Length: 257
Image (cartoon, rainbow, N blue to C red; front, side):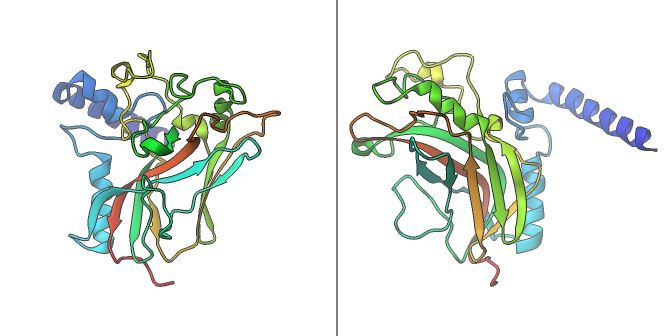
């Protein structure tokens, strides 16, 4: 019986791919089925997983109450720290590039992005999200070794909502993507144009319902490298990890716990 079900599912996937390939341009198939570490379903021609998620959400909170959105929380890298906690709730003390969850709102996560940035205080907001230690952004200097940033991708992401551990250990390798065409100069971004935050985010296979009234713990842990040099050393520059979930915000829909 199990073999029959497995074969039926395999046949269904084959049919979907076959039909989709006739409806969707080849360039869009990458976006549809993911590239690199991506596991996100987007694309024209078929009902996307995102649409199915949206239908589930409005079925719970009601039609007209959910809209596409994202959250963004940043943590500054330190040479003496290998565990980072991301507080997604709004406190009023956010950096201008951050976007957090209001206590009254519900945010339903469909997919997750984790990126690196070199944030310069004098040009705050102009940084480019990185999916790998781009050496034209993270430039080697006394006290900083770009290759040490790879320790981050040998760690894991943990998500705990209330008393339940929803994601115990999602490997950070899921978020590492090095494009075929890489940036060749500090001011040349056209060769680094393969990044799309949706395409290079990760679908965890479940919906995460984040209520502003709940206790929510989000941590990234990675190995503590001896003599680690990952903190920014350039003037007015901070190297950061960016936790950026995508999904739907439902205004004033947080459960009263």
